[in-house]
Structures are given as C-alpha cells and as structure tokens.
Image (cartoon, rainbow, N blue to C red; front, side, top):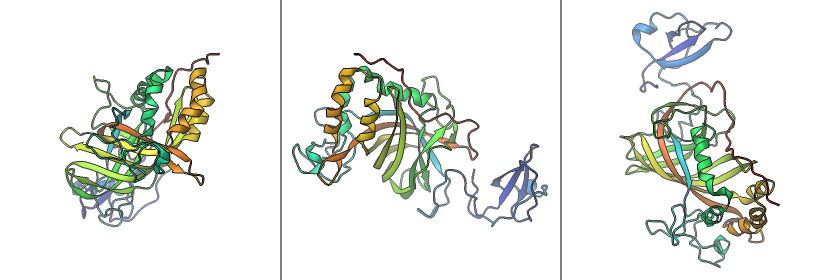
Length: 349
C-alpha cells in the first residue's frame, strides 16, 4: 500500500532470502543477480536495520505496473480497481434500453443521422440511446448462440475474460470532480464465492499481453462514476472463430457502493462490424444463421458513416456487475489467453 504524501519510502530487495528493507535516503549498492527491488512505506525501526538501499527522492512513490498518469487529476491517492464479474448485453423492451447517446443525435427511423436506424430511450426517459446490437439479440436467442452470455460468464469465472476499471485519484467515493479512468485486463484464476461470482477484495494480476489504453478524465457525482472516450480491444472466441472487437469512444456509468465494495452499471461504445462478420462467416455455425448474417449485421450499423454515408460501426451497451479488487505489482506467473471459448459445432448442410 502507498504511504501518505511526505512519508519516506523504503526499498525492499529480494535476493531469495527474507526481504531486506532500507530507507530511501541512503546510498545505493550493486544488487546480486536475480534481485528484485520493491517499495513500501517506512517504519523507522525497520529502516534503521537494513544496509542495502537505493537512493530515491523523499515522498515520491515509484511507478507501479498499471498506474495511470498522476498528472491527469493531480492526486496522489492510491489506484483503485473494479472488476466486471458479470457482463451481459443490454436488451430492448418496447423501445427502452440502457446505454448512451454515442453519436450525439436523436435518430428516428429513416433519419439522415445514425444511418436511419432508430435510437432507443433510456429507462430514465433520455432519448438518443445507441444500442443497435440489441436488435440482434432476439435473433441469436433462436439459434445456437442463445447461450452467448453464459459463455461470457464462464470465461469470467475461469479467468479468461477479466475486464477491470482502473481508477486513479479517487479522493471521495461519493463526490470527486476528477478521476483518471481506463479499462485494463486482468490475468490468472480469480477466487469465487459460494454463489459462483468473483469475490470482493481479492488480489489479482494485470495482463501483460493486452495493451493498456491511455486514461480519460471521469468524475463521481452522488456515488455514480461516469467517463467517456474510452478505447479498448476485446479479444473473443465465439463459435470457434477468433476475433478482436475494437470498441471505441466508449462511455461508462457505474453506481458505486463503498460499503459492500460492489458496483452496477453500463458500458457502451461502438465497434466495426466487418471483423465480427468475417469471423462468424468463417466459423462452424448453422447454415441458416450464416446465410442471414451478411444482411442482418450490416443492417444494424448505426455509427461511423463512410464517405458514401454507409455506417461501418455497430453500437453496443453492456450491463456490468462489478466488485472492488486489489492488484499485484508484479506480473502473473502464468497468464492464460484472454478469449472466450465455445464448444465447436458442425455446420448443418
């Protein structure tokens, strides 16, 4: 854990024996092969006993893996993490759906905006909600893809899809006008409770293989975290087809419960449909579904029109159930691929 601003930092040098700790103000020495250096808030009695040290500036915390730029919100508060232990597609009922107004337009059927695809209204009555993927869900529910959300949940439980919100500079869990936010991926096998869900307050590793995007500025108002402009790649494996959905200009809205360490919210953005369509057409799926996809999927596109006015991206809104966790400074010993796996099926002639 980080010390308070102004507290001295100690250096921990691990050489295969018990961790040696020394104050930052002493002079450094040459370390033996394989030694690891870490940092911890100093205890005077402990620091005075250790001879192996590295010189550091007093009160300045060294950079840890996964930390975002402290200059974004100018805070020295420790980084906090929320992991998505439940991810589901937001559905549409009578024109109402959770999500975000991604393109900044309220579109009715046939309008020039949104490629003429009608937007939804939020449960709070806000118009312009972009969640075109909701139009695909009733069709998928009639096919072998009906268990898609169960597949996603299985990947979360098995440590193959660990999506985290990294929050830097949270001064107050109820009200904070500047929080640095980004999406990162975890690695390793998570701990689960008796209900099958990932446990709150467990310690996790961050992925070394999935690149981290730059943080964006968010805020917390009345216990609700909001941020927009997030970008991340979501690697998935559906129907034996591997692909990466590049979700851009995503927004997140999460209601925080500090007492229980949990949160509930929505993540919404858009992704190019071409990669999804190509992957599914090359997968071993039912021929009826495969024949319908080249017409169905492009018809859902409602974002990023090209020079001819044809939209290239599909909007999506994902419901999130989250839990606060901690993160190790060191990399995971072994890291599984961040993919979703399904049982391969044979194509129907």
